[in-house]
Image 1 (cartoon, rainbow, N blue to C red):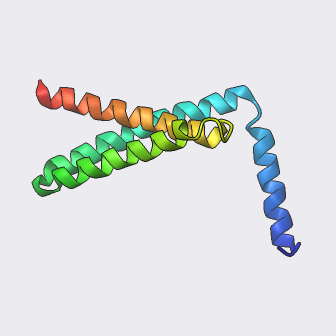
Image 2: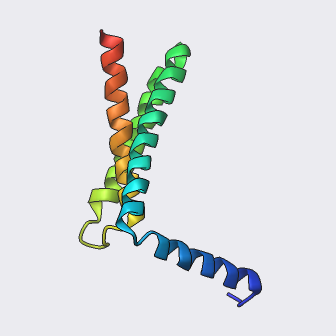
Amino acid sequence: MQSTRLNRLLSVIFQRFKLWLLNPWRRMSLLIIALLFGNFIANAISSITGQEGYLDILSALACLLIVEILNWFAYGRRGKITRSLGIDILNLFKIGFTYGLFLEAFKVGS
């Protein structure tokens, strides 16, 4: 790729962002935000599909595929790649998503 001003600017911004994420507290805060965002998305999906009665099976299939794909990214290639921040964020999103679906199931069951 050519070394244009835009490419240099984006590479500098990306490098500074990587340095910003080296702080363990910032990394932990991003992981907690991913966990809570997964919980929020699960609650939103279950609320939307609960109102629309004909989308239940398709939304359950989509949720299952999302969780299994994220499992494959987090645990399937463990020996080939190292655990990066992106993989950890996706894994905690999946955990929050699954936890949110369980909470919704308990609310419906009670």
